[in-house]
Image (cartoon, rainbow, N blue to C red):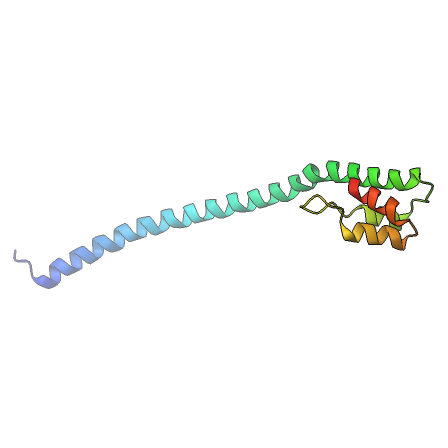
Length: 118
């Protein structure tokens, strides 16, 4: 039996298609697994992040409003809202915190001292 060029080409093409079909099936399964793992990772990260950050942020807000209360000011929603602004990366008090406390009627020095704890 003699092989022609076209027979050789068709044999190679069939084997390529067969191999490609196996790889495509494996690729789809691997892609689905990666998507599921990525989704689970995002959901876990979204659920854990507030638990990690809430404890320290709540304590700092309480310290800030405690200082304001210590100096004789009434602690209401404006004070708590202003104290919820954390310190800047540089370590200085957040201007939104200081300005918010001053808008609530707290003196400049007390606002700066309280926001230094926020």
